[in-house]
Image 1 (cartoon, rainbow, N blue to C red):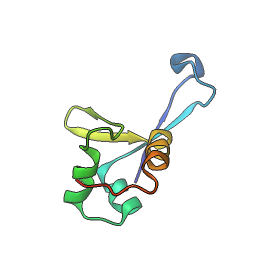
Image 2: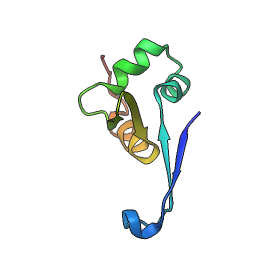
Image 3: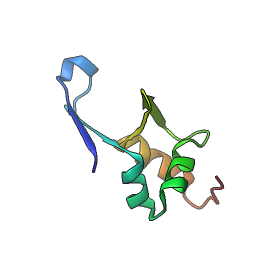
Amino acid sequence: MNLVAQVQDDELNTEDSEITLYTAKDIQNIFHCGRTKAYQIMNMSGFPSFRIDSSIYVEKNELKKWIARMKNRNIST
């Protein structure tokens, strides 16, 4: 499942008022991998994840940008 945060436009100065955050479980589903591999990916240098307390997240649009940059590359964790 993904975490969706609703915020006012003026709070983030963005046109889009919905932000979608993915968890490690979402990364497992997206990349068809296990829990350990999902956390390894999310902790890679250059991966656009961030932490809130002990939870780790990646914003949907940042993940899309990262995937586009990684296209045709061999990624090692």
